[in-house]
Image (cartoon, rainbow, N blue to C red; front, side, top):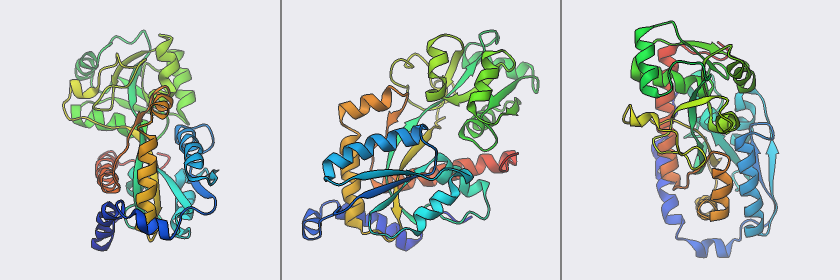
Length: 329
């Protein structure tokens, strides 16, 4: 699937930087003058939903207009994202996009009805959530180096659990296996919860999960954490977990969520949303809320976010092709 921005789209993204300086234009045409919607392609309670609501609440105060979170869960986020693509490009409907909908789906679904970098204007990333390799206390390896040594001594004998085929947990572990040249068998579950239950019960010994989901069992020492997927460490209380990059330089993967607008949205609006959200992501109170849920604030420019999305599409496309992953398999 073609997901790279067209030349015209690239020029529009470059224009956002100039629009960021064009405050007088917004003064002549005030925005917003009515409620703004955030479309979230996940059910309430997931990290993307929680942080979208946090940002929406703060923007409601800043803009003096209600920012409403609207959940449209199901279908791997595809129906909701297509809805966001077709929304009026006036800034009043913005899309919460993620590692799944914008990073993985373009390779996993050949007939995807949207193109992330053509049908949308990236605004900014909001947060990263590292994933973590965790193990039952009885598992013989307690560090990443020990896991690599064990897997190389016993190729095909170790197995790991994930939340299911095509999830960030599955593909991140497959990326690690590819880079380390390891043969570890994938045991897919229907969700992180059942997989974690079997890990805690000792029915599986190894798992890749989000730090947000694994935080409690790690803190309670019911499971042991071997390594984080992000290049930088998480904040306390998970700051003791070394990144995979400490052992395998350059490794960097995470779940993430950000904001995008329909492709023809005025650049002045994109620039304003970018400025205001980035200001919130540097607010100590907001940072604390994100970090206490094992996330990392990820402010940046629209161009930086577009480049990040392009890299994500390339990375997960490589993994999907190499593993032959298909939805539900």
